[in-house]
Amino acid sequence: MKLNILVLPGDGIGPEVTREAVRVLEHVAAKWNHALHMEEGLLGGIAIHKTGGPFPDRTRELALATDATLLGAVGLPEFDHLPPEKRPEKGLLGIRKALDVFANLRPIVAYEALLASSPLKDEIVRGTDMLIVRELTAGLYFGTPRGISGESGERVAVNSMVYRESEIKRVARMAFELARKRRKKLTSADKANVLENSQLWREVVTQAGKDYPDVEVDHILVDNCAMQLVLNPTRFDVVVTENLFGDILSDEGAVLAGSIGMLQSASIGDQQPNGVWRGLYEPVHGSAPDIAGQNKANPFAAIGSAAAMLNYSFGLKEEGAAIDAAIQTVLKHGPVTADIKRQGTAGTTEEVGKAVCAAIG
Image 1 (cartoon, rainbow, N blue to C red):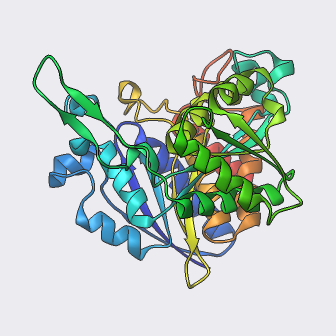
Image 2 (cartoon, rainbow, N blue to C red):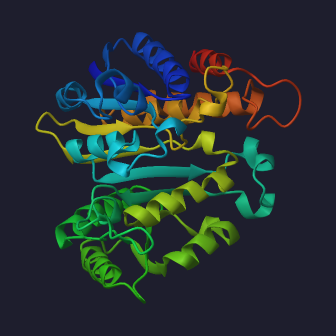
């Protein structure tokens, strides 16, 4: 199979973790005799430095021409004083919108080898295996009107949470389809007790559920959902929620996984005419500029994102499963990086990537 992939290393530790994900992809392609074609582009702070903007036109063209995009991380402290539209993160929002990848899939799994890395008790975390489905192209991050107005001393900031019924319905149906392939349980998180936006969300999800009678559906207020994630995480299978809520809840999942360096993600949209699910794949963690260039960043999330790419965008489930199994092997036997190393000497980013390749065989 021909794998046509755009690689966007991005900022901070992005190039380091992406390098190891690419190493694993090259190893898998050689083992299974796939033709791997990769092109590199600019996004985020590095794009601002080199082109003047966080999402260059050339990157947009490449993303729309390839089957899948692998992203490292975006964001640098030097841009923190700028308004949102000029920051590196604007490039991330831009490519999501350009690709129309409306569903962000974030699996949260508590691996046995990492139970001690979670600050929660083993008996609470053990058995956690959930998938958070976050709507990605609407809500507060994209709604208008937005902005800051007024004079100094009494300025007003406005952001609009805007959802169309069609936007809720498509991500709900995606979540139901995914739940049908798992344990057939879907939880929808909203704030329907105070937000009209959430009232529409709950109504549309409920209606969509009628087409999936085999999937159990329940609704939960997002504040209670945040609490239940750390009190009883095994109650969840698939959780679907809007953009802002999903951003917060999925990062909370790092407590369950033992490190935010373990959290992969896949952002997918509608299936293309050629049968490919165009997607954007990235680790959940940020650019961590404080450890950039030191060969100590955890690459498991980036490597796991590459496995998700093979699964969703190319239908290569055997290859994706081989990477996931190799990650578990390395977690058990090492080497692992300092964020999850409990004792002894931590491994480097490169050592972990090579170990995953060796575990694949």
